[in-house]
Length: 252
Image (cartoon, rainbow, N blue to C red; front, side, top):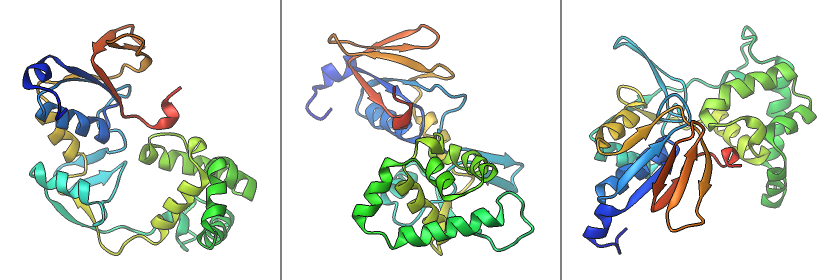
């Protein structure tokens, strides 16, 4: 973009596949640079893994990405740039690591197995961990003896967080995340008013962008100078560049 003249920028267009945080942030940067963007989201809302449930002004529940760590400097810089603020967020220990036997969502037998697996994973060499990238976490835990009902619970719980089924996630990556859930940082943050505020703020900045919801992209043709993006409804969008910002498992 830096090497493109102003007159060419006004004529250039970019189709962005995926309206999650990365897709909207891409559109935000391109819009600031003077390029026309079209955002296509196959789901029923923009924001991807970020979704807040609000009930009045007193209750906010995060249904997707729940907290922000102090190490996520790029995200914290964007939050500040958009005029948003962060507040301290109290994170309860994950129910699957809780010692409270009253909870029925995750069986005690599976908790014991998972804790044992996490301990083994923590002591693995990098080469051994890389070997686990060849297995998905769903079947790996099933092989280790975790109950089918508990696997279903994990699938439902983390589908929104990851943006895809745990059947498509590497065992190594997922176990690393589970360890973070168990030993989460003492101080974590959330966006004041709900994490979805960052999505709403980005959308408000994209008045010139065309936004398409509930229409999945089924084909991208780059065989000519113009990139053609076709959706499930049969619409075709022509642009100079296509930016794909969806989970890799959704790319056929």
